Structures are given as structure tokens and as C-alpha cells.
Image (cartoon, rainbow, N blue to C red; front, side, top):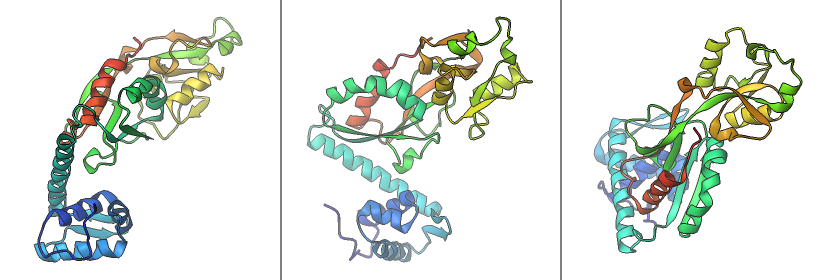
Length: 298
């Protein structure tokens, strides 16, 4: 049951810390109020009272919302540890270590969702019927410390030091073309003279972009798309050639590998979490499952 925030005592306790954490995560009064299931005026009054009690500002107010000061971040980190310990206590109390349950929020790219996670996820849901999943796709590594998600699945060779995780394997890439496209080209057409499909300007620093520019500096891509899944779709659809992860195209009958795999584009696939939450029952269940279920083509 949610505590009443209308009559806060003049001391720094769990209720006050929860409000600080909610505002840090929500970034605005409305965002914090939604998390706490109260109105914005209640959050405003509560934060002002806490700041008066401690004698320092906990948030800087600006056009972009509320930004935590150094003290605000310190108090929020204590609130996060309390939150984690409460979750662990609930699991112990209800014996959820043997039957994990609750909401598990996973963030990953659209490409990884459709080519890596969804193909293996059904057995997990059958094995753990009390776990609910929320899958959010984004190219940005969300802030796991602020509980924007519980688990992140990402491709990287340099995972953030403040997170813990497991390497699930290596994502390999190659240059592919659609068989229908190749059938329309003269047999001796060099790779650099073909129609290239590339990621658009929203991902200018993607490794595939650097590789193409170094290998074929004269190439100006004819077609641009927003993600690797779309590159693969355009290749299969016969629009040209492009760099695609093997895990995405998986020996598609209408595509042919022209060059590769390319070792310079090898990149690790990681499942990551905040160290304070890594060993919660539902988190451990997903980590253990993914380590055995994900098999990347080589």
C-alpha cells in the first residue's frame, strides 16, 4: 500500500527518499507524480519540505525539468538500495527464489528484438508463468540505475563499467546481396560498383559505415534505412548490397553472402543489469536462460 504523502514528518525517512528517487527518475513533477500515484502539487510540496529539512537544494529547476544536485543523487542512490533490499525481502518472504515473478522490463534495439530475443523467448515464458515481460526497443542505452529498464541487451565491445552482465556471444557481419538483384547485374560487376544499402544519418558512426567508407571510399550509398533489420529487408528485396549481421539474415534463401564474415566488424552481444538488481529472482532467471538459449551464427 502506498504511503500518504500529504502529511510528511519533518525528518528524512523512507517516504522522503522515495519521493527524491521518483523525481530523479521522472525528471518532472508530472513524471514523479505518475510514479507515486499522487498529484504534482503533492510532489512539489514534499520536495520543498525535504530541501528545507536538509538545508540544501536537491534539484536544479530548468526548462528541461528537474536535475538532481550532487546531494540529490546521493540520496537517490540510498533510496535505490532500500528499494532493492525491499524487493529481495519480498522474494524471500514469498519464496519467489524458486518461482520468480513480477514485471521484467527489457530494453534492446528493434533488430535484436526480432532476430535474437523473440525467436527464443517462448520457452522462457512457459518456464516462468509468473513473470510478465515489457519489451522496449531503442538505440539508446537507457539508464538502468534509474530503473528505466531492468535488463539491457546490447551489442558492444566496451560495456559500461557501472553495469554487470554476461557476454552471450559474438555478432558477426558480412556483405550480402539479394539473388534477384545479382541476376540483373552483369557477371563481372565489381562490388564497389553495385547499389549499396546503408544506415541513414541517424547512425553515422555505426561500424558498418566506417568499414564501407574504408573499403569502398568511392561508394555513395543509393539507399539508406534506419536500422540493420531494414538493411536486411532491402537486400532480400533485391535493392542492392549491404553489410548485415549473420544473425539477422540467417542464410535467407533469397540472399547471398558476397564477402565475409568480416572479423573487423565482430562485436560482443551482452545482457546487462545494474549490480544492485542483478540477483533478483526474475533477473537471474532471464540471465541464466539467455546464456543457454542464444546461439549466434558464425
